[in-house]
Image (cartoon, rainbow, N blue to C red; front, side):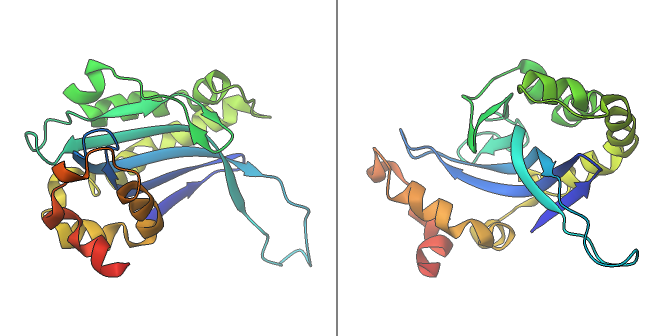
Length: 195
């Protein structure tokens, strides 16, 4: 399940994510928060008609992850991607502040969403309003991310249930492992069963 906070020019998506490292097959999971720009759409229908909302262009992502073979709640794999090349994220960026207190770090980032968008190489039509609106909802966004924190996902089945829509991505990871012999087969069993 994804939760979307939709503003006039952008949306903040929050979800749980499950990741397999392609190099050494270690497993990560936790809250993923992504900022995407809305694609403007032509108005349709009457003054009361439902309008099309297209949440498309990714510009920033935070992955507030634990390693499943690490210390629960230590956020040893927490990182962020400050920009995207099309739909592909930039390399991982690491900050001690992300691991030390991911929720405070996320709240601080959401206070300047226009700065995040500008750093990613894009522009908002009304950056001041975007900053004010997103900052006003930062607490709700952080709370949504906390509800998808790694420590709240206690089993392989629950992780699969929370990320069922990502089966294609997980199967792509499973097919690209450099060290499949190191893979925790028990933790990936629900995804394998869904194949």
